[in-house]
Length: 631
Ligand SMILES: [Zn+2]
Image (cartoon, rainbow, N blue to C red; front, side, top):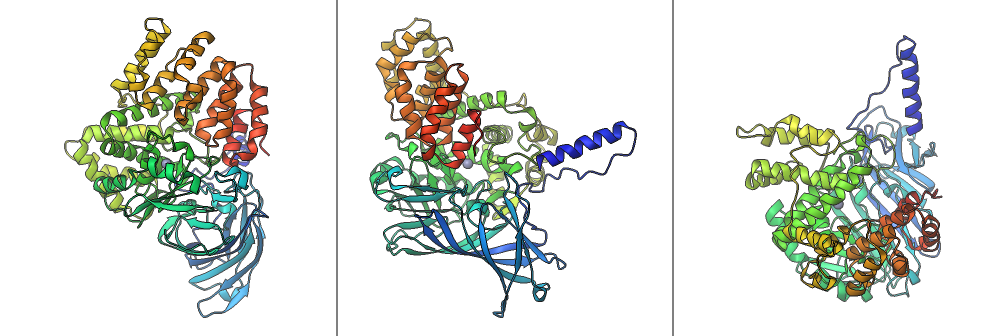
């Protein structure tokens, strides 16, 4: 896609330079999903039925996917679905009267990012059907980019294998042939067959009391985009957290999970108070093994979480607030394309901070706001200007990796700016009405802008114009009106770092015991870049940062260790890189090693030995950071 487009551009420039008429080019269409082959203008899936056997020996899912599709274009004779590495063996078309016919199918040209279009020709008799069912028999590949198959020794229990999916952004197509675009919403049902001692869970109606039978039925009555299709199978057990909330985990992690996430029921109740009714039934958590690539994934009814949140002090549960908030922003009102991802992530980051305020307090919420603002500033230094808009042009590249965290943190600041301009009461009313107006729909940035304009910008007292908003949405960097967050507790930690570095205070006077883990992270981040190694050793001797059980403190510390080349802590650093598989935690540590001028080979060596336990998404991001081809 990318190279073809650039060739066209080049040709257009050449031709116009010669004074001849430029060939007509297809203009960029911000509402189009450039990462799906599906012909959604002709057919749309409304319901999906899965019947899959989970085979741990072969590391594959095998079975069928049946689409109930509505015809939009009466002249259409082909259905195009997204796939990646799927072995499709048979396709049939079924009609409501029970008749069925085999359909011809073929794969189109494979794209490295998008996979392969599956083109199904409809038998002639079916060419006029307004609704049809398409049944596809298929098997996934062990290389499926969505599925991670963990052998028993990479689980907490060590006795049973475990498998889980990560469909966002465009990985659902590597375990189900489907229209893999957030623009299409589907309901689904599934029958999942597993080894009898294991439990399957999905982003659907999990029954906490279900018997272990090796055959599990699921229904998902609310329409969801494909990236929210999710499955996990393993030696998983359930414990309740509240009336409508609970946690699934391997038994070895269950007690720690119940302690860590004890506030989830209250979060759910507070969220309903702030954002309107929770529309999904139960809200449960699933704690996965360390190789889960993200902090959390907002699979509806069942957020998937990294075990790196189990800090033992509930200090990292903002991730739960974040995934829960996605039940409104993202899952209920969904970005139409990945270019509009700030609608999911920026809105959710804003709501997350509001939840943290009511569940904990303003100090803690402000600490988290400052830390995410500082990460944004670092991102703005490395992300190309044309990708710094909240809604950039996005028609090439990989939607997993186009903006760093800009759509999260800049989106959050944009909404904070609106809250400040209109007042919290007015802005909260807007948020509720927005969720109400677009519930179970997918929308573009432009639709959001029109709604905002109509609802808020045009009120008489408004000091915000459409051009102000457009600057946030379409321009790089940060507008001058950015509401820079502040935190007195973090300021104190930063001042302490400077005072200690200047030898104005002794290490024994640093009151880390009285600080939040966030303040400790900020203290470490604030250490000067030219700190001598004996002073790094002094800190580690007193505070034992190298042995921390808090994954975020570890992240901040080992980035410093790598940047300063404090080799005395390389052993625990390497242990850290092997303990976690969450990209946010380990990719920057690898990057710091690769960039310190001396340790690129060492980083590559550690990676080669650790990569088997990483998820393909994390593996790919580290390979990029180390300048390796990831094949
Ligand atoms: Zn999110």
